[in-house]
Image 1 (cartoon, helix red, strand yellow):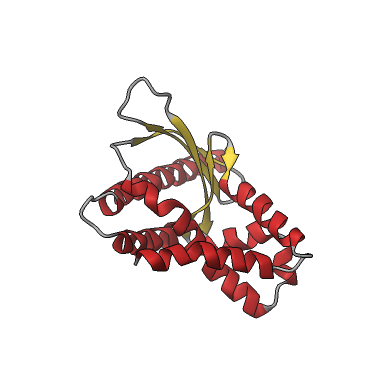
Image 2 (cartoon, rainbow, N blue to C red):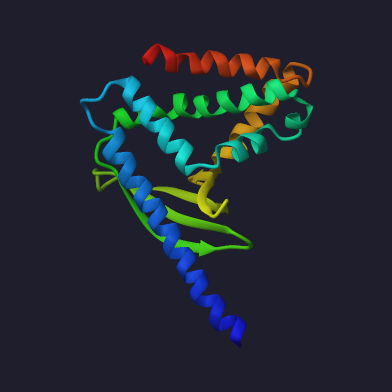
Length: 195
């Protein structure tokens, strides 16, 4: 009985923290990334900061690379992690320039095993006739801070999709990550072009 009584408030506190974390992230993203008068270079810089602060970038990057992480040399691992963060920013930054007033509404927060928490949300568009987009935020406590470890949009995991895509590129190159690093370098070159 004592374990139940003390565990319930702790779970409620974790849920509240997770809700505030995602609400705060959404507010920061809208305020800092959707302003029409900022340059693309500034938007990239701001998004990189937001991404690094809120996501478990290294943990996600390592999981996405899977077994190939252990096969890569330390130099390749370092370059991959840097390029991985740049790749995500390059892939998503321009979407904020097209912001048209979408709102994030949290529908449920679920504390799971260990430090895992999922925040379920919907993105509402200004056009009331459109169906909201379902976005689930998977969080984990890392070094006493909440970090996003995956994003699931309409049932599709961002991390799982990247893992499948990256594995396909690595396999095509005989199990070495050289080809993947080249793809990531080429993609992230768009960041430098926009700065």
